[in-house]
Image (cartoon, rainbow, N blue to C red; front, top):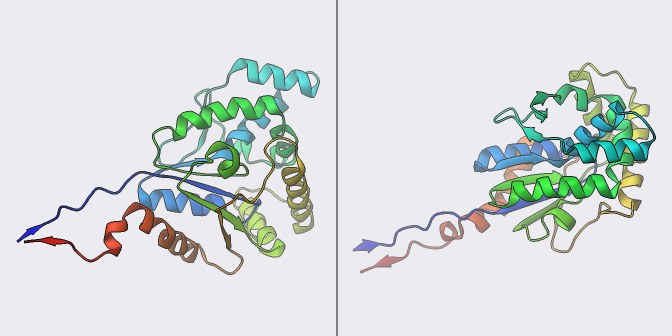
Length: 239
């Protein structure tokens, strides 16, 4: 008997959107590592642009114009996935409170978004990408083979962000964190350019009561039938 050779699993793009503090970055990173895909934290790209705008001079309009015109090179280190701005490791700089408090305002600018859209398009061209953010399924990867929308309770989101900031030696009260999250939610949902939204065919996942490993297992159960549909069927034997 001759066994049919198993086809190679195909490469796909996975779009993950959702609110801040829901754990979507961790989920996306874990998923990419498990699948051997490239993880792209789109939020880090916007934080990088925000960091550059803050450090520039002039009015906000002038700052944004100057930064976009300079065409900064934004890349991630292999493995650790740290943000490099023009070759310099700025991961710690983009994670500070000042950037967090300004990123939603700057991220809604159409010039910023258009510039980063070009960078993201280059990243996803060959597929095999897990990208997370606010407008990934709606704008950046509308043809993604799998679209997820991550949410969680406000309490869970505040607790997660609080622990994250403590690890980075940032000191903010939970009240301040909640205010920041709620402000960002309102800005992201109501902005005119590429607002945060639930797109058609996106699968909603509430991570409030799911552990990190449970979230990964849940999503892998969605991914594997797309990547390896043959494994769900009986072995086809030719005589």
